[in-house]
Image (cartoon, rainbow, N blue to C red):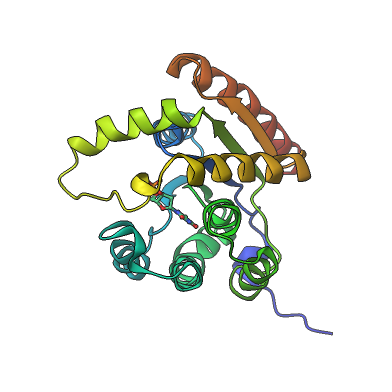
Length: 228
Ligand code: TMP
């Protein structure tokens, strides 16, 4: 019998919350609002994003979000996404969750399924195998999916992009049919896992969306207190 105990044996694992959606869905704004609210409520919380988040993954991010749309084959792109995720997971997210920190992540693996899988035709089985070999068995505790019609989302994203000096626009220019496949892909993922996903109509006001997310997160907080 192994009697060795780790610090994490005494600490309740943090909750892992992801924000997903197409271009211009407003998920980044909402994820930052939730971070501020949890922080104000005294919960140890961290905000991060994908692709990127850790130092190594941010370097890989610049390969993925800048330059020509056709710069990478879909399979290369998927492998780069998971290379970034592997670094982010092992150096940033997993240690934080084990230390009891709640992690809010702006995009995670569902974006790979939606963009590289449903959008670009990379095999979902391959993407799931990559997930199992990098992240493992852990899934987000809750995923908020911000659903927005493609034309509305792209118009919002173009407005933001024209002010963006970094020109992280590699995916925006892929055209409506691609973004329709991504949107439908996200919906399929949400329908397949209704206990994890919470889908929101992202055409609503920022305040209304913020209130809906906060109401739902309070259930996660209550459950965490009950288990504590
Ligand atoms: P962002 O604009 O939300 O920061 O995301 C950058 C782009 O990366 C966005 O167009 C979606 C794309 N992306 C994927 O294609 N697959 C992924 O796994 C992730 C995390 C993002």
